[in-house]
Image 1: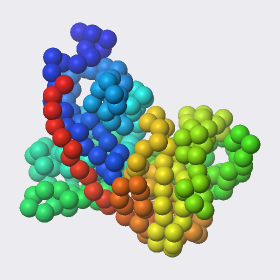
Image 2: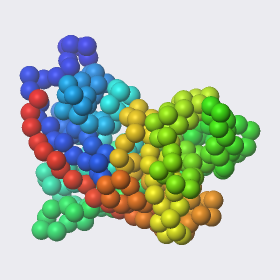
Image 3: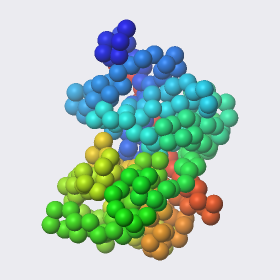
Image 4: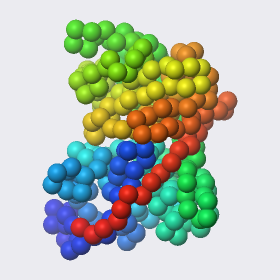
Length: 285
């Protein structure tokens, strides 16, 4: 059997989950059967012709952690990490007995991620995740340019100049600080920055409105998924960039369209994210 032959089994059980509206189709492949994940994602994530989601999440075995997570975006591209998906993964794994402790290790393409589930009556009500340390060096984002870091770099996009702050938070993120999120053209500008020649591999784009020293608002254009209701790694990156630019403290609440995340950039450089994860429904396809 080849990858081309194997698109779906005869039927497959799935669970639809979301983190503040950023939604995913979860399925278990603990036997690690070879599958055509990009084709599956394109078909299953279609909002009209499939189940509908921002991406699919494969729950896989791991030789170096408790479980492994693969994330395939709706367009078939693969993501190294996703903050909302990792919280949903934590809830999924714990409530189904795939792990026995409230803190466990998940293998991702961005490294080992350690979620901690917070429960009431053995139901997960929120998940706290050590998202690792951001990397601000342009070569690792990657972002072209002579400076070592990308902090408020003026870049022309169309007929406008935007000042961009970029960093790697498992995946590349670029922040644009704006006075009012209601005035942005999320899809047009987000796509244009994502595809800008400065970013040879593309970038996620976050528009950030500073509310106070301990609160920000964020809207995100995700590379490979488009405009989404929430982005966990983007919220973390936005919190770090806000602190780097002295707009906020190192601990902030991030207001998204369907709720909030609490982000702390600890003194050792690690970023901690705490927020909800919800199960929408389960079924078979």
